[in-house]
Structures are given as C-alpha cells and as structure tokens.
Length: 414
Image 1 (cartoon, rainbow, N blue to C red):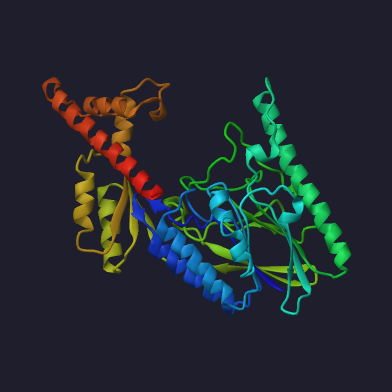
Image 2 (tube, rainbow, N blue to C red):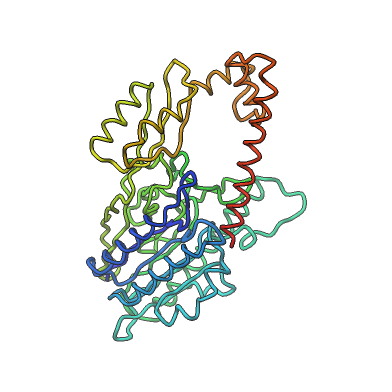
C-alpha cells in the first residue's frame, strides 16, 4: 500500500510578474510519471492547489488535465483538501463528478464528520485505507465570536476548536476501523501552521488567522494516525520529533529565499499499519539564482553563469559602498546576450542612504513611498529647482504601476 503526499502547488502563482505556467506543467507531468514509476495507490494533496481563490483559465486547465491523467494511471484514489489560498466553492463544485473517477475533494469543513472520513477500497472492493481529509479550518468554522473577548481569548478558541475537530475525527475514524476488522492504515490530512514550523523569508506563507498566530501544537494529532500529511508550510519538514507527521513542502520554490532548497514529495509504504517513509526529490524546472556583492562581484558571477549558458532567473542584491544609480540598466546590459533574466534588484546602498536621513528610531516600514523618494532626493543632494519635475515624474510612475496592478488583478479574476 503506497501513498504519495504533496501540497502547496499554488498553480497560477507569478514571481515578480513572471508567469510560471511552464514550470507548473513540467511538475505535474513529472508527478504523473512518478506516480506510475513508484506504484502509488493513493495520492494525497494537502491544500493550496491554486494561488488565488479565482484561478486563471490556464491554472484550471493544468489542474483538470492532471486529474484526468492520474485517473487513467494505476493510482486508485486521489484525495484533495482545500487550503487557505483555495476557494472552497470552486474546489467543491465538481465534487460529485470527480468522485466517479475516485478523486475525492474536500474543499471546506463539512457539516458531518463522516464526509471527512474516507474509507478507500482496493480493486477487489475491500477497504485498504482510512483517510481523515481535514481541510483548512477557517475561523468561522471553529470559533463563535463573543462581545468583549480579548485577542488571547480568540486565539485560545481557535486552538481549542482545531484540537476538538481532530480529536472528534480521530475517535470516529477509529470506530470505523474497528468495525471493518481489518488491519489497514489510518491517515490524516491537514492545512495549518504547527508550532515550531520553519518558513523562509519571502516564501509567501501567510498567517492563517488575522490578528493571531494560532500555531497548533503537534499534540492535536492523535497517536491513532499512522501518518499525517500536512500542507501550508513550504519548507519540507517533519513536525516535532515524529517522522510520520510531515509537511511535504511546496514542489516549486515560491521565492528566491528557497532557491537552494531541495524540494520533495513524500512516499509512505504501508505493511498493515506500519509505514516506511522516503522522500522523492523534485527536479528543478526553472533555476533561481541569488547574486550578491559589489558591482565587481555581481558582474563576475553573471559572467560565470553566462559561460554555462544558464537560463536562471536572477535576484540581484547590490551591497557595494559606491552608489550605482543606473544599476538596473547595467544589469540588463550584463545579461543582454544570455538566456538569463533579472527579476528583482535590491540596492542596499540606496536603502542605507535613505535610512541615514531618518531618525534613529525610524525604519523603512515607517515611511510611505513619497517619504522614501524625498529621502532619495536628499541622499543624492538634488538641487531644489530640479525636485518638482522629478517628483512629478515619480508620481506618474506610481500611478502607472497602480493602474497596471489593478488591470492585472481584473485580468486574473476574469
């Protein structure tokens, strides 16, 4: 009995404006091949299938095409739960149709616990595994608001609500298991943030409950669960000291902070209720590269990458002492004859000069975009008579960026 656990695909996600559909498609093709080669019987997808609640047509196409391919493979069952990025209504809409293909979708908390406890059968019709498919539990699903309650009260209610849900579902699952009188594994799924979980800066992982950390202790998962397949955190990791309570992590790096991270999916082979875990590395479908240092360091590294015919997307962090006002232009010239692209530029020298103009207690977070520009003008000793024209151009650029962002959001919703 082999299961494969993955999560956090975030289909449709962009990286600094760069669309990533080719990467998503390559991953899903690889995943189908892996399912066949590894003789996977059950695929578990632990939430955040899409990056937004209104996925683009292309993202939907990739999703449904993948499900069709898996349905035609030797894999007997697919179980998908909703994550905090997913629309429960959207995921649940084709629920009954997909069930005919042995694809089970639980987009949101169900009125009955039985809907989240799936007894899956083998080809001869005999029960072979119980899956407790618990989706992302939204605030409204597990907590009743009361007047005058404190933030601590709200957080405690969230923790208690999640714990009670998993306790109840474990109890009911074990009652089913005892009735079946078969030594089959009991597996749980979830999309949440466990206490002590590791994240990476810029990986896009959101706090799940506004105004509250609500990190859940691993003790909410019953010892009756033989494996717990989690989603939400993008770094592959085990929870607490248990190898069998795991985040599979995102299959693609969500940001440059994950550029050197080895992504993987989790394969668990069961003999009765005893499971053996192994990690299957996910190939890199689009290389991301961090380039840091002064201009000489950056230029040398780009030259080295060009010599290897790299197709990497670059994040460049300038850390030199000299001010390079035309850094972006110089970088574009440096990669002009290569297949690389510069997606992000961070000029720490300019930021440091801006912050030097502020008080000792002030941080960049305290300034708005207009304050930052004024500090930049001061940092570069721009003459007063030149400032009105530069400010006007800057404001026009801000307006253009805002309008582009609104248009992009509208296009995405369509």
